[in-house]
Length: 580
Image (cartoon, rainbow, N blue to C red; front, side, top):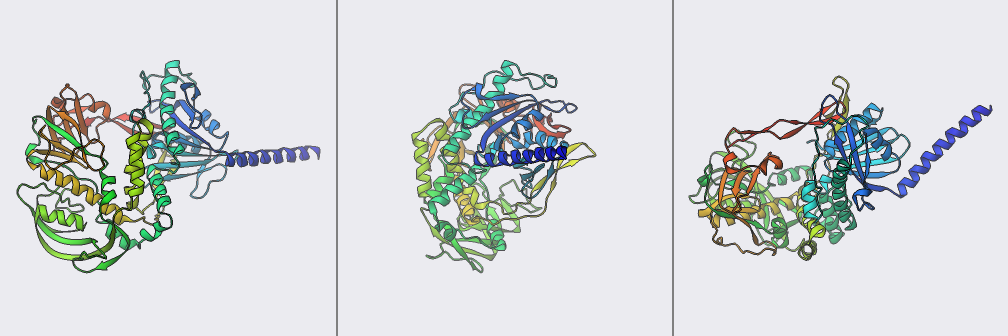
């Protein structure tokens, strides 16, 4: 009887401690940044060291905790309720998920109970968060700091005015289980963690505590507009949103064929100062409930903006840059801007796009298929942009970097995809690895897609017209930049290093080679090179010269993640130059 009574008391005490830990943790949730150092052997994949820094208190390298295994890390996390950021959660979570499954934790779509975890992973495999309810009752939400700071650690250090880690780490060196990090290894691990922690603290101190920087931006804008937000930007029906979304496109990236594939002479590169914020600042933008109009909508005082579906063919006018990109057609490459469209296509566009197309092409309109008309207003974003432009202009380092993030992160939130069907982590017993499977279909309300469509249309309009004004020397453009084959002042561009919407001269180059969209290299006067090739790692690009731009040339050093027992390794799959 006494033994049963003691057992009862022990069980009651354990439950009381678990409850008390949960209550205390709920009142005080600690924010951390962590990073794993892992082995590269697929047959011995494990965490050999981790760094952990308290965002609120870590100030020096000595404030960063260093541990030796995934088990120690998870036990450490279970000590308290916390939010823990990894800079690239997709990689580091592979080790956490592997550990959880092997320890008997199960995935749930609901709020996790003890011994369960939930995840937020997009249908494209982008990791946002993993929330674990540890078996002792505490919780840890793992988040991806890349969604808050979309740069490499080295770029963050530079942008936020911090000193980078000195020295290197031999990732391939063998380190036995239980290996105690050397002083050099500890310093290297701690520096990366501390850089991200300091940058996040700057964001948190500015009230930016949402899951992504885009959500931070939208949250602040909603606070500015208050109750008017829902009236200005009503939630539209799904079918209507899909028709409007068909007019939403990205930036204009184009390599001019006249100068493609051969080494050019000298030139200069110009960038727009805050292109998207500049068109948000003073252009006529949509708001409110749209109305349907058959045929070609007519712009008027009440509804000056429209999105329309058009069926047409087109021929580019002589001496003009192309600006129509046809997607979803077997007749055209989706990545190319077309000079000739002989087979009829049906596309949706804003009235801004349509006016530009009519200037650059001889269009034969076969039919206007109706569209949506919108109220228009200027100045919706003035207060928001004025605030962050002032911060950007009057600060350096962390606050300036923060301002640039906030200025460039708002517009995209308006066109957020309402499809939120997730991917779900499961354990593949046959192959002894974690894998992702598609979850149940899920959707959320759109924000206001028309706003994103018009902002991006105006931005394309700015860049394309600037290229056209400098047609004789125009070689390349990428969203907000022009590469011109002259060092003389450009035609029609206002040059100013800081003024919103003006153009800043970034640098001059002695020679350039423009291969295709997202693939070029320029030799600088000091002998250095600026290289951009989509998919090419920076560590390779920084070593390349113009002579290296050869079709079919292969480079080692492109790493591709592969899930293996224990977590994930990075395989060197190499990179092959494609000049076509």
